[in-house]
Image (tube, rainbow, N blue to C red; front, side, top):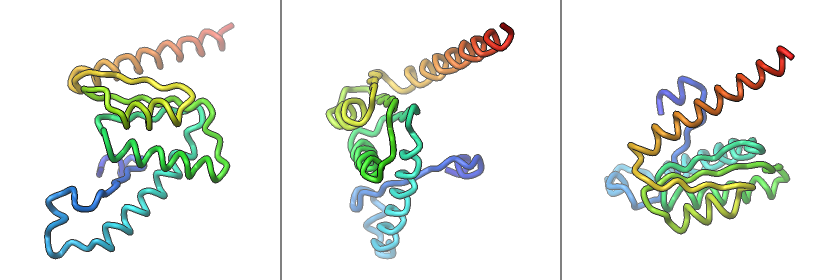
Length: 146
């Protein structure tokens, strides 16, 4: 989170009250958690509103984040934002209903589901993206040279 903050990259937390052991501590404020989570949901909606022709990547969240993402997409579309060309990718070790439906199928123009262990899939995905970006850069340079 600190690295995201330092880089100016939005990072959000979507609390499901009662799901973490810290929620049982007597000094935890439900009001503060709820307010912070609502602010983060609005921040996420701002990010999602800019995803036309972009990519949403869901890494290993099988319940909460797929639901939050789908609701953010609904909010953004209801406010008139265009999400044409949105590509969504879900990466997990199993195919899960919410990942498949709420991330891959419902919100996106095109969706992908990558099944496998994260320690294998994430490095492979990183290499594939880097090679794709390098190939795209070569294409741009070739077009500029012509």
